[in-house]
Length: 268
Ligand SMILES: [Zn+2]
Image 1 (cartoon, rainbow, N blue to C red):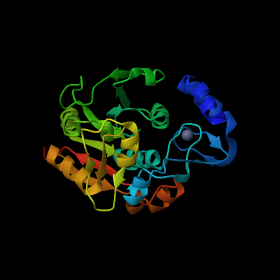
Image 2 (image 1 turned 45 degrees about the vertical axis):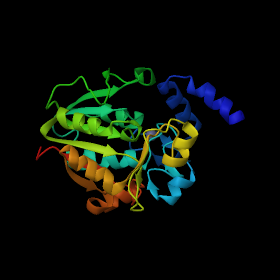
Image 3 (image 1 turned 90 degrees about the vertical axis):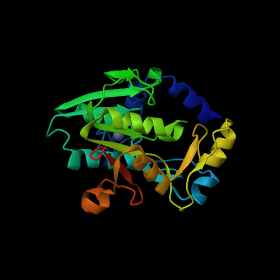
Image 4 (image 1 turned 30 degrees about the horizontal axis):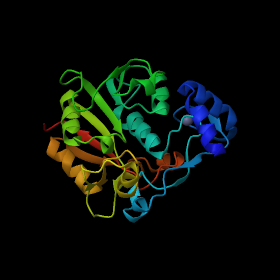
């Protein structure tokens, strides 16, 4: 009850204010968040413990211990995206036009520290993102951007909320430049049992039990997620930080199971 009250109070504060408060509360010298540069005493645990998440071996679901920056709330998956953007995409080195859908606050702060980034953020609900500069209202299934517009599109933990995810995938493909790459992440079931999906469900409690979160409309099987993206026209190249950058991946406390699904437009 006390926690719930505290969350209701802090949840009403603007994101930069909450971030500043958390940065003070968790101040310490144990870790420096590579995204927001807060020096903190610990990373915190996060995630959910619904049975389906464990039964389906959902990477990006389940409880993850000591994983999340308590200030900006970046987690292992955000650090994995940062690693790719820095070491593979060349952010800060060459000019890049980037679309960040449902922008993570930590990654947004990281982009702000880099030159040569032409940054555009978008979301359907702008009220959640008043603190983000240059954000545009956009329905991911009908985006107000021209064809071949972006070098990189980042879309993390969004598609599992979208009923017509194949339309969203084709939209991401459309707005990418011919040589562009989409960086896509969703909670992925890795038990080989495919995607759990039922459009008729509209009950948050049942969605928690079936898909692992109250507002998710499906739980992707890893192979099926990649197959849907291939079907949309992408060349899919899953990226695991430990394969190419093992020392840095270890330093960043990345989850060895976490996959960044990199989608190239090259053969579209
Ligand atoms: Zn942080």
